[in-house]
Image (cartoon, rainbow, N blue to C red; front, side):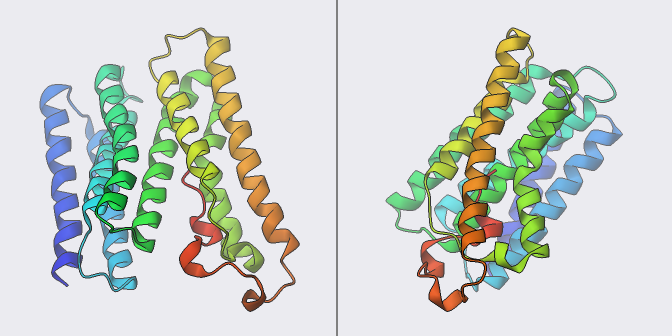
Length: 251
């Protein structure tokens, strides 16, 4: 109970402190504060729910790194909301995003080195990736076009499909390619943020990222479709070895 209480409280406190720091350096309008605080409350409430659901008595070292990533993503979301009312502080936005992307590689390494890999950690990591990509896609869509939102919403569309179609919520086998695809999309969106590259090059990078996401999600949908009439007990993919369909993609 202490971890369930302290972990989310620590995360929410860190979110408020980050927003205060941003307000003191680059300034935040009301929309930025509202979005940033909402992100902090929602993500840490979901973390508390995840801790209770997985009967976990503490946050592991890697989970703390992921919590830092989610906090940074909340700062990016606040700056993105702020940018609809005035020019965004692109350097600050890029700095937060770059650190979050670096930490994305760190948390997995920490989990392996400390032997603290867990199902909750894998889910938390994937959700952190997905949230950052969603926020970045909203920012980039203003300059590159609304089609970029497909990159940020792909994972959530897959999740909704799993709620509507029972056969899409089956456990999927692990596949490292999903992480590669998510990382590629994150880098492409980050490069598109400053809008300094030639438009053709930026759109090409984004289009390739979207195509890779479509291929990755499509492969999983095809795998699930082929087994839609097979009973769960007959599909030899143990739950501890692979995420469910709703948790399969990092972005």
